[in-house]
Amino acid sequence: MEINLLLEGLYQAYGYDFRGYVRASLGRRILNRLRAERLPTITALLDKVLHEKGYLERLLNDLSIRMTEMYRDPGFFAAFRKEVVPLLRELPEIRIWHAGCATGEEVYSMAILMLEEGLADKTTIYATDMNEKALEAAQKGAFPLKKMQQYTKNYLKAGGEKAFSEYYTADHQSAYFQPCLVERLIFAQHNLVTDGSFNEFHVILCRNVLIYFDNELQQQVHRLLYNSLADHGFMALGSKESILFMPQGLNYEEFNGPERIYRKK
Picture 1 (spheres, rainbow, N blue to C red):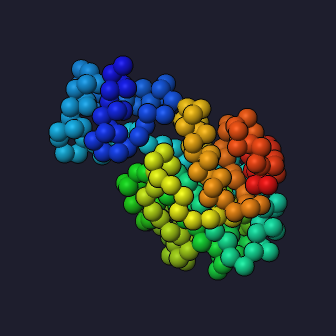
Picture 2: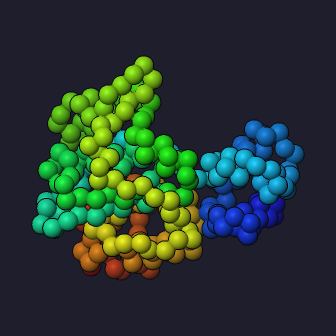
C-alpha cells in the first residue's frame, strides 16, 4: 500500500509514472533507498521526495534501469550484423532507435557495428532514456577502463574484426570513445511510459526494458513501438522478452527467434 502511495505521489507531483512496473523489482530498489537514507518508512521517503531538494533525483536513479554493457548478448549483435544489416543496405537512409538506452553502452556498440559495415554515413542513431543523469553519461562516451577487457571479448564474439582499442583512448581510469562515433548519435530524454512516438524508425532496440513492466504496461509500450516502426522494420528485444504472446505479436514475424529479432509485417 505504501509503495502505491509513493508511486502515485511521484506521478502526481512530477509526472514520472512507475505505477505499471513489476512490484518485486521496484520494491527492492525502494528498500535500498530507505536503507541508504536511514528512513523508517516509505511514507517518510515520499515526504522527503516532495519537500527536499535532491531526493527526487536519487530515487529516480534507483528506479530507472541502468544495467547494460557493450555488445551485451554478443550473439544478438552477430545475428544483427549477418542477417539484418544486408537488408538495411538497401535503404537510402537508416534510422535506429535505442529505447531505454541507460548509459549508452549498446548505443556505442551499434555505432561501431554500422561504421564497420560502411553504413555510418547514412545512419542516424537515436538514444533515449527517462534518466537525465544516465543520458549525460552516455553523451560523454566515457566508460570504466576496467570493463574494456570484457567489452573486447564481447566485441569479438559479436563479429568484430578490428582491434577494439582502436575505437577509444584511455587514461588510468576511463576509456573515451572516438568523436567520430558520436557524430551520428542523437541523445534525448524520452519516457516510454508517458511520452509518445517522435519519428519513424527502421530498427528499434528495446532490450531488457520491458521485463520490468507489468503486462498492461508492456502492451501500452508495444503499441508505441509498433507505431514508431516503419513497415518491414526490425524490432529487437532482450533475451528474456518476447512479443509473440502479446496482442501486437500478430503484427510481426519472427525474424530470428533465439536472438529476439522480429520484423513488422
